Amino acid sequence: MKALMSIICLLVLVYLIYQNFGDKELDIVISGENYSVENKDYNYQYKLNKDMSKVEGVAVFSQYIEDPIEYGGTLIRLMYLDKKAVKLHEQKHGKNAACPAPFLNKYGREKWIYAFDSSIVEQILSIELPNYNDPSTWKKISIKGKCVEKQISGIDKSDNQSLMLPNTHFNACRSFVVFNLIETPYLNIDR
Image (cartoon, rainbow, N blue to C red):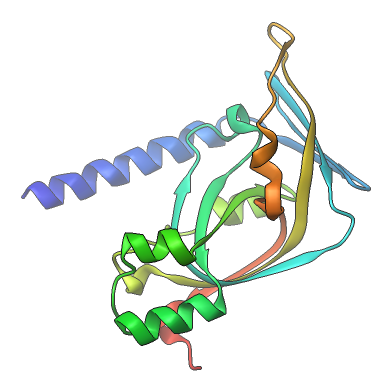
């Protein structure tokens, strides 16, 4: 009974988060290597890498950002295993086994996901979040986009306060603007 109540509470929380985000208008503009995300309260400007990049692997954990615009427009935090780590996981733990937290911490890669436009926002927010303890929820992902090199500015329009993310947020292509996202179930993949 407690498990059922926990699941219901989690579903209600995800729904409320999604509804809270959906009520806020989000304007996204890309011009050359400049990327901006804003609404009536906030404005963030970023510099993108000029080259397109591709991220491929298996998403084993992600979380929605409760109020994306307050976090610079980040929609989700994605933890994934690249192809090499997936093979190592399968050798050590089996294809149908959960991903132990120490393994994920050691071999997992992290991306803070931003969207290219409103259709990508909708696609990202409709993803069923994977659970590292349940491989049936994992997704094979192929993402094309651009790395965010740095934040140029961030402003809270209500008081003109500067809102800058730490530079480490952008190291090693950690922040990524998604132009195209393809996801398929992990366990239906033939290798």
